[in-house]
Length: 87
Image (cartoon, rainbow, N blue to C red):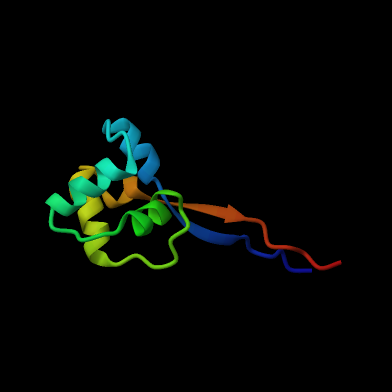
């Protein structure tokens, strides 16, 4: 039987980057984003920080890169979840 490929999922490392950049809260991150011209609600930002966001626009991505002073490679990661095999 052919081996099934794992499902791959994009994850955001915002929480880790916030800690290493000394951004202590989602509210503080929101203030930085708004100052950088990114209008984002606390609720939406919480979903992003907790990796529950299903959509992410380029304005928000670019804002996160700017205020967290990181690269795309630092902001995004991926996890592989083994595909369920049917017996």
